[in-house]
Amino acid sequence: MRADTARFLHHLEAVRNLSVHTVAAYRRDLADLEEFVGGYLGREDFAWGDVNRAVLRAFLGEAGRRGRSRRTIARKLSAVRSLFRHLHREGKIAANPAAGIRGPKLDRTLPGHAGQDEMAALLNWAEEQAAEENNLSRTRLLAWLELLYGSGLRVSELRSLNLDSLFGNQVRVLGKGEKERIVPVTKAAARALRNYLPRRQEVADSDSAALFVNRGGARISTRYIQRLVQAALEDFCTATGLSVHSLRHSFATHLLDAGADLVAVKDLLGHASLNTTQIYAHTSKERLRRVYESAHPRA
Image 1 (tube, rainbow, N blue to C red):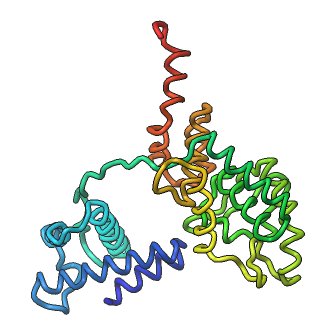
Image 2 (cartoon, one colour):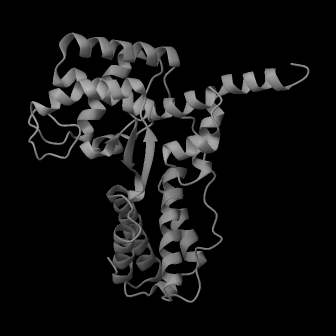
């Protein structure tokens, strides 16, 4: 990889604090760009200043001809824009050839979510199991479900929680880009955590910081959380294709259905832009009906 590209990726990781997954995606897309530009210009020793808008459009066009989805092409364009914006800001290139290039129009996909009755049934079952068996596995699963649905956490945020992340009726969450936010904890989640912590103490080392641990006392893996939560969802929810992330979608959708402010939901979810949160407004049909019936004089 070219030195300028490598420095840019280091900037994303060290300065902007992007996640390792985002940086890895940028690395793959920019490696594809370097390979394409070298072939397009007929030399591998090109400078980024040699790249113009036509070259970048050809790069995106080639991705389309290879059958890449519009979402993948949009992601590649995002990586290209970020690179050239950085190079221009650093004075490495005189002009930004990526400025003004439009990406493909993306279909807005509505996120899958569980119904409120389904969530109530799932949580009641998990609570009964935790009370009946009172072991690490059952009390931990209940705490996961209550935090994922009750506080709208991402699974990575749930996994990274430490004992000192909890204070009062709130939890300190480290989200995307290492951005910290404080979110409320429901009474049910607080109760589930109180029941879980004694079971945690039975297996965790006294100096362990992790809130959620496995039977060996180590921090739980993301994949393990995903597997157990998805299995529970499949037993109680009728929608297909639900995942652990669907609990976060359900959290946002049910808040909006109950009349919550979109900006407040944005802050609870830790979204950088309101545009990201607005997709949930499209799922809240019941809320729209109630607003219509209460506000329109002819309803």
